[in-house]
Image (cartoon, one colour):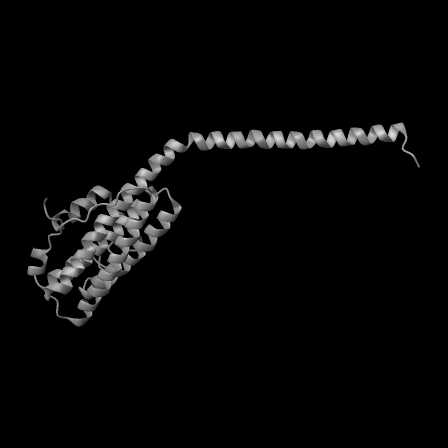
Length: 222
């Protein structure tokens, strides 16, 4: 049956209407894309600031890991510690800290930053103090590392970097628990850096400036 003029007009209307609707959707999508592009463009400066902040935090953590790794190397190499359990922990913890150094270095480079230089450490007085002094210092340094990572967690912008930092934080805390127990500190508190659970049920963070002040005696002057 041949189409009538009315049916032909109706089809033309529906076709044009559909085309207009699709065109409207595409136009809207285009406007949304432009809005998103503009929003992304406006966020470029803050993103650069956030990346710079992440690099600063990573290099701060890297410096601490350098100090820890070198301390364990000196413990093992000095022969001061004879007790097999402590000596084996020093070996294993040293390996772990070196892996942390590698991971943090890679993260800094991945953000386009320059990794912090390895500092010269100053643990001669600690080693001269004998096995007890060495063990207590190692426990304190690990508590310091755990508190340092905890404080910076809220300041890290990149989620992948945050996940990496938290994975290191938990290891630092476990190191601290083991060493404090061996040192006879157990769950005893009495300060931010004393005991396997120095702050009880809720760990307390340490600001970057306070951490650097605490670690300063273990870094040799230039």
